[in-house]
Length: 196
Picture 1 (cartoon, rainbow, N blue to C red):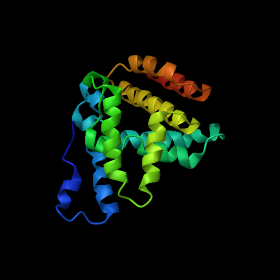
Picture 2: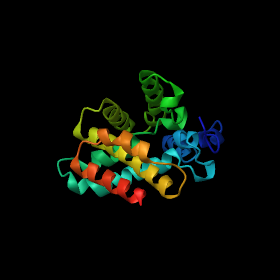
Picture 3: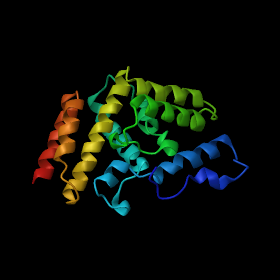
């Protein structure tokens, strides 16, 4: 795991406080965990987004694009967007370059999700929601996954505009993963903008 600092929950010592306090000190670690793929592409740590940055971007994009998708449950979409990467508080941002089998990655993240959320009142619902996202069998989970990919491409666009990377490979990789015309339109817009 590549991080700015260790997980804050360790600072609580023996007395972990309430279950909410303990979970918060675990979740807030996402502000410290770098999106490792950007570091591997040469983005300096002081400019690199964290998992929390990505999750915020994902949730905001969901919120902004939900009006074009009235068939979706907005609460469920935002819940999935906010929790989809919570497990990375313990496992870090595993990239394809890490050569971790997807089933192993999912097992590790599932264990982390259970550790963080199952202690909370109503936590089982959140754990089930995370599995819903992982299983990709509902319209909301599929939408959030596509937004996850769009957010990735848009962040590549930001780094491209800053002259830090050539984002074209990211745009090309994300394009086939976006199934709706609205999302394809947004990707085309960011691609055209960065070409200027």
